[in-house]
Image (cartoon, rainbow, N blue to C red; front, side):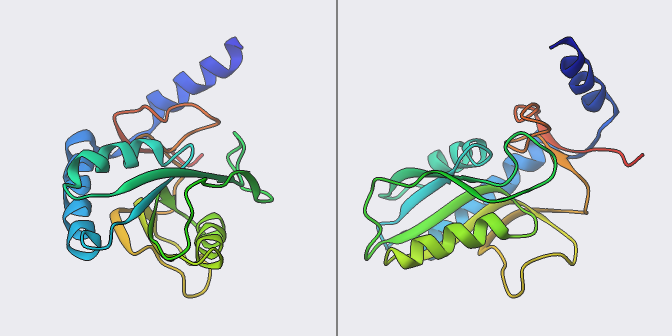
Amino acid sequence: MGDILQEIESVYKKADCLYTRPQVEAALDRLAQEITIKLSTYNPLLLCCMIGGIIPCGGLLPRLNFPLQLDYIHATRYQGEIEGGVLRWLYKPLTPLRGRTVLVIDDIFDEGHTLAAILEYCREEGATAYSAVLVDKLHDRKRDGLSADFIGLRAEDYYLFGYGLDYKGYLRNAPGVYALRRS
């Protein structure tokens, strides 16, 4: 256990802060305004993507001053690793999706495999589905035609952690968005 904690401490110390807490909070303010304009009259159901989406979702909820419902969804490709694998469904929402406007909230839009699967599931269940992400990673490996509807921040193609994003299951609680330095 000591080895992983030393690794985590080393990663955190060496990382570059891309966005500070005030910058992330300002992005959440802007996201909330955009979401309010688009979805406030639709009685939306917000689906928090576990585990990474918990902090962005928790930051957005008190900023959304209109009636809404909240549930969660859990599909993962990472399972504590730093590279994605096969998608595993761990939890599907109990709230019926048919006829609902759903906003899927996640920490990051990287290549889009997980987000695409979640949005497809919501639409198959009869929902009109939108997505909001704290960070959109800039690179050319995205699934064709897929983008998030609401984006808080954009970041270059580094491994990121903080504000919900993790490094091997740790550092989700870092007070900003950080990038691992490339070796």
